[in-house]
Length: 387
Ligand SMILES: Cc1cc2nc3c(=O)[nH]c(=O)nc-3n(C[C@H](O)[C@H](O)[C@H](O)COP(=O)(O)OP(=O)(O)OC[C@H]3O[C@@H](n4cnc5c(N)ncnc54)[C@H](O)[C@@H]3O)c2cc1C
Image (cartoon, rainbow, N blue to C red):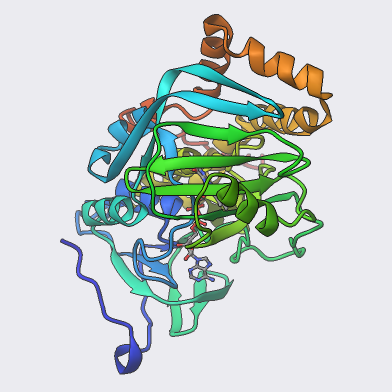
């Protein structure tokens, strides 16, 4: 079991030291990276020193409605955090309701339980500290400086460890989402594509056994989602309590920058249109973690790992681009056309085709797939000997 330090009050001790890898952010992406580094060894056979940092304790602050394809929960062996499973998606448009029979089910889970399960299976150290910035291989936190040749930013959309231009709403490609978590029960996973709640985006109700996660997401960061979230909860007969919200990136970004690896929202890995970002944070976190493991083991250089991870990320760019196109198109559809699409998706062949393609953007097979082989060693051309 990993040992946790207490960092509250007078026990909030200064932080320092050098590590093989530092994972900044202990939510979906960070914990997926940590999972891949469990038991990692250096080239000399000694255990790797890996540190994970987050401003909150593991699982303390829920960052999503926690809906995910069930196959992903199973593949990651996280069913102990499972709450409820849904085999269809109920879609409401103005005046109409249709059910899409899904080819794979979606499940809700408990955030704290899932994070703790993942953390228990890692063997990295963990410290609560606010990450402020970075210079070179050193991460500056509110408790002091720590350094490592391998640093991963899993800190969410702010991409704290990147330098460069500011990336702020409302000008950055960010959606916004807010939800409430009233107690209650429900049998259906429901979404509302209805301009009365949000001109571009959707509302949702995700039941999770004894609580509902009711929210509204807007693709337009200028549109305020608090009033429609409260209204949707009210329309569903629930009290708006337990607010949780954030900005959600809807454009893929570079997965490496200035020697740093990025995974999850910090790399824009949340999918446009659906704002589904948990399995993609797992997916890219796993790939990133395997790269780091190979570097620690001396099987490849940091530069090779940076190149390989960046190339893997870029190979997915066209999928994210298509999802973004759909995100831009759907709000422009006239009510009749929108209803036509929603009705068409009740056809099994069409819903199977589209949802199976959608799952393949970040399929769960990656969890059990063998790590990618190290890239071929580039041999330097022999220097010419002057005659
Ligand atoms: C309202 C809402 C509902 C959503 N529902 C779903 C859903 O049902 N299914 C789905 O797939 N996606 C959903 N998403 C999207 C999903 O939540 C994100 O894509 C996902 O959380 C990204 O994971 P991550 O690990 O990259 O970042 P995050 O989950 O945002 O985690 C970032 C971590 O970094 C820490 N951190 C941030 N800054 C600092 C700092 N300076 N110092 C130290 N620590 C820091 C945070 O405490 C946090 O633990 C939802 C988003 C919103 C806003």
